[in-house]
Length: 63
Picture 1 (tube, rainbow, N blue to C red):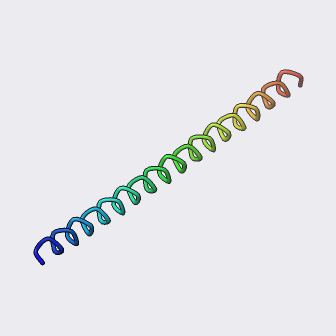
Picture 2 (spheres, rainbow, N blue to C red):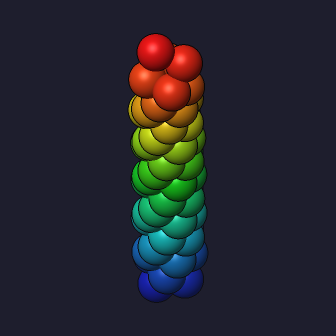
C-alpha cells in the first residue's frame, strides 16, 4: 500500500514539474515574440521618421 502512495506522489510531482516547465516556456516565448514585435515596430517608426525628415530636407533644398 505504501508503494502505491509513493508512485502517486511521484506522478503528481512529475505532472506539476511538467506543467510549470510548459508554462515557463510559453511565457518566455510570448515575451520574446512581443519584444521582437515592439523592436520591429520601433525600427519601422524610426525609418518612417528618417524618410520624412529626408523628404522635408530635400524639399527645403529644392525650394
